[in-house]
Image (cartoon, rainbow, N blue to C red; front, side, top):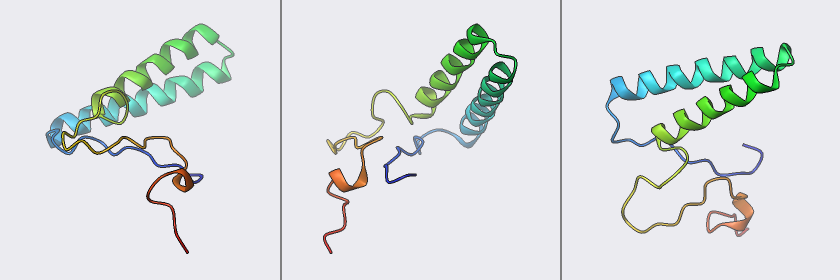
Length: 87
């Protein structure tokens, strides 16, 4: 997205756990939008915390879920990683 790399969800999560966490993430994102439309900064802050917590639980943020020593390029520009095109 916009030239950035984003970490995938942890593939070790069960399908049920992943679905539940994705549902929580979507609910939290909707809550962010509602709070913004209502111009409620406290509700927006709380909703953003929920988004962050869901993403950490999914493995998209926070400690890496893999153990092979590969670096985490989450949110890095592709051009600044080994994945950049050489031609």
